[in-house]
Image (cartoon, rainbow over all chains, first blue to last red; front, side):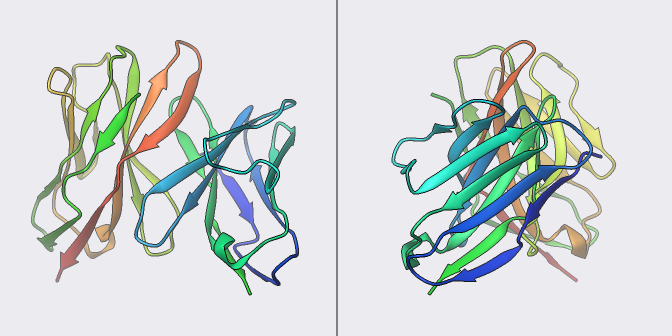
Length: 113
Length: 117
């Protein structure tokens, strides 16, 4: 089956620093990838849609200058959390479209201290 | 806008028994897909089963089957012969079919399934 790899699986950073999360489709080309945020015991909240070669589309309420998304190739999308603060601590998940449905990365637990 | 509703925050089933998770959705579209995803404690999202809206036949995958009622906009998941490894959070999801391309997935709030030995 299709594999999406997300890295790192967990990261701790200091407040004010930036963190980059990578999402790779390993065995298929992904024109479209999605970034989600998941709070404990809650559902996935779509943050943005990442399209290869174009600007990401952000959901309402998501700060595009804080959550920078780059989709420079058909197999890689990155999410950079800039000037991270403790309230950005969360579980971030990426997914890639392949036909009908999507395949998900393992997720990244971000802790900002 | 499309919405997905899972009315059961938690469910419990005895090992080897059968359990049904409910899901309803609201849409004005005619072409779409419906999914059930499983999220175990590892938090990896795993596709359980997929249903194309244009198909009347209910999808099945081994012990997992769905009851798709398009007119009622209902999409329930039945797990037969429940196993301890089935314990997880289950999310129902909707995806628009644009006829050659697909939109993002819209998720319900999830149902936490516990399996008792």
